[in-house]
Length: 384
Image (cartoon, rainbow, N blue to C red; front, side, top):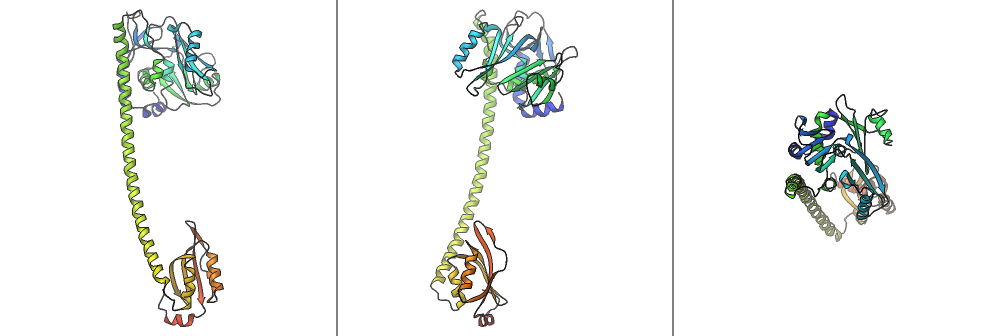
């Protein structure tokens, strides 16, 4: 498998579930490409004398089935299944998967297996598994087989699955995209045939139960006890694995939610502390404002400043070089400047610095000369 494949496949899968599925495939899985092979850790292992046996789990090579995508103007699944039974009455050799409904139409991928394929309780086309190996739907899978066999191109997009065996002019992923009508070129994932066991395990880990049910067939010719042994056991293992992976996922999500709640609790405590601090400062300000409210100013400059309290909040009041400097915030700072100029108690009022916005208010620095500041300057000792 190339580096590109590892980045797109291995890092996106649960290693434990793939390992379990690999063991299941080694135990119950077989591969058919004209001959029956046992799926083993070293690749395909040829076996003899089992051609007449019905297998529990069989993966079929692309050469031994046809694959078509059809669209039906039907949005009722029950009606769609009736149509499919009428259109494909020989249910033994057909498998189909119904994609999610889209734009009021049903999309179905249908596989027609050749009559020489052995019987199996679960018969899967290899292209269906290969289309699952990458979470990135914008990828094309290229299976590089032995020198005597052509490459296999597989792509899944929207509600359809496409695959073509290398032939004629179709010798590259780009030409494959053109052949299936894909305008957008996709990146290719190249896989060596020796890696098929691992790739099949990855694909199987992403097959939903509804998809898997589409490939299950049980005939009435075999003994019920044999059916239970060959069918129920592997299906039970797969279901148990599914539940195990789902439980692990739920535990992980639960841990993530608990961690998120703890972080939110810390943020909430910090917010409450800030709110408490703001409330205390606000109460101190209101107390000070109430205290000054019934005090008659000793100087006309305080009479002037007192009139500004209803329109502004002051953070600092100082006397610097004979000028009173007011720092604070208000809704409209030019209004304060007009009040000072029109009071008759001050002159040369101006902004010492440009006004800036902060939390919906204007932060200002205004200075002015009090008309009766001569005596105040003599009494001042650096500010108020």
